[in-house]
Image 1 (cartoon, one colour):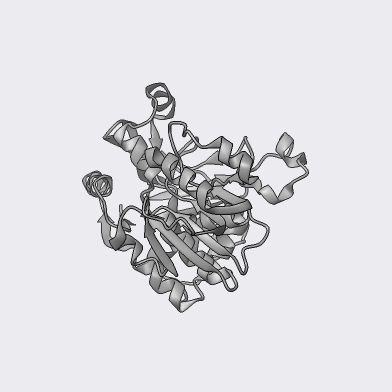
Image 2 (cartoon, rainbow, N blue to C red):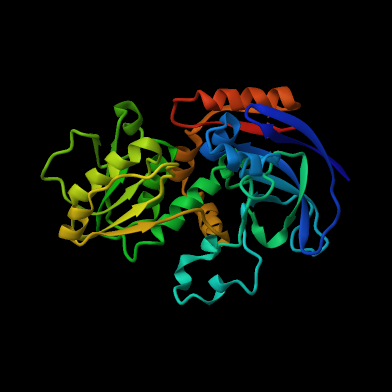
Length: 346
C-alpha cells in the first residue's frame, strides 16, 4: 500500500514523500492518528544543530510522539481498530555489549545500537507506517483519549527519570524548569509518590502556578534555608547551567540529582560543591516499552487526565503539507505551556 508522508530535507523545507509499505515480519501496519512536535523536532526544523550533523540526518521524517490505529497485524497480537501508542526507541539487537551489563535497571533505552524515531530512524509524520509490534502499546480509548495519549512519550520519559532514583517516597523533591517536562514530571510524582512534597523552580511565575506544586519559587529568589532530599533538572539549553548550580546548593549532603534537560553545549557546574556535599548526579534519557505501559496506566486517574488535557493548546487537522508547515511554525514560536496537537488526515 502507498502512504504519504513529510520529510525534512533542509532547515524549514519539507517535501512530500510517497512510500510503498510492505508487510514485514513482526511488524504491524498502523495509521497515524494524533501526534505532537518535540523540541528536538524543532531543532531539526530550525536548523539549530551542527551543520555537519544535519547533513547526515536529512532527509528524514520528524515526530516521535504519536498514537495510531492498527490496520493490519499478521501476528494477530493486535486487532484491527486497536488504538496504540508508538514507542520511538527501538532496541532489537541480541549481541550488543549492552545486553550484558550488570545494571539491568538502566533499561534498553540506553542501548547504543537502538534506533530512535526522528533521530536516526524515520519518525511518524506519515499517513501509515509499518512498525515492530513489540514497540506498540495498546490503550483503551474509553479511558484515555487519543489526543491525551499522545503525551505518553513525555510521561514515559518522566517515569524513566524517576527509575534512576531508588526511593522517592516521603521526600522533599525539587524540580527545576517551568516547561512541559517539568510540568508532567510534577504530575507523575504526585501520582506515584507517597507523601512527597514537590517544590518547583522556574523563570515564569504564571506557568509555575499551574503545576499543582506544594511550593514554587523564581530562580534566583530561592530561600537560602531551602533543603531538598533530591532534585530533577528539566531545563536544558543555555539556562541548564544556572539551574544545576542552584540545585547543588539546595540539595542536602549525599543527595541525588537527576539531569533530564538536553543542552547542545556543555555546562559549567560547581564541581567543588559537588565534592563537598557528596552529591550524586545521574543522567536520564528517553524511555522504553515498560515506561510507556506505566504511562498509560496513569490515565486511570481522573486528576491526571485533567492535568494532561490542559496541555493541549489547539488541535490542528493535517490534510496536506501546508497544514504541516503551519503547525511547525506555530510550535516554533510557542511560549505557552502546552502543545499544538496534530490530527493526521492525509
